[in-house]
Image (cartoon, helix red, strand yellow):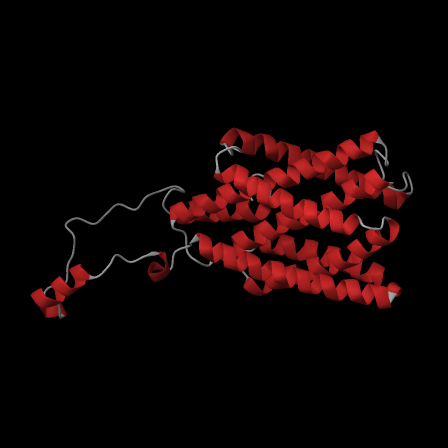
Length: 283
């Protein structure tokens, strides 16, 4: 995501470098136009038949469409759910697997996410593996939170889906705006939140804090979780804007995988923040 998700930042950078329409340099047309003559096999009847053909659409030209992104996103979402279901069942029957699946899925997902972000080409296998790793992480993490706060997982799932629908409707009807200024501000906010999260993790591992870490489960902790939810929610609007820009720029269809992956990243982030928020409210 441009400004908040390295996946979308990478996409827009590559699109600009490669000169797709709307992302930078435009290719000058060739004058005079070159048409194959009779020696090339095109006679008057052939040209007339060509003129009668309908205009080529994005599917015929290999360009990105919204449907491409939607279908890829649904596929990855199903993969996350399937892996999450497996992890949920395994941690129920074998509790000893909870920590390995939780930490392993989180670390593998982080590594794959960084690899996807910095690779020059779109790697579909890595994107699929990322969805599996995140599913394993979410299943085990959800099991831990559900054991401590019964019912919190259902609340987080419903809230995540409702927020996604609300952000999409708000963006589509122009209620939620994404501008260059909002991208810059949001990027700074994400950087600050990331630094805070890393410091919080280090403090927990070092034993300087316990439980929820800085902010605890009180009003300050709830405010921090609300900030995380707000940032994750607005990142969805920025994702939608990046997808619209990609479609208008007629970028190659292969980027549908990268854009879908970016949406999954935001959804996973939003769900984790929702889970933490409801757990803190129940604490």
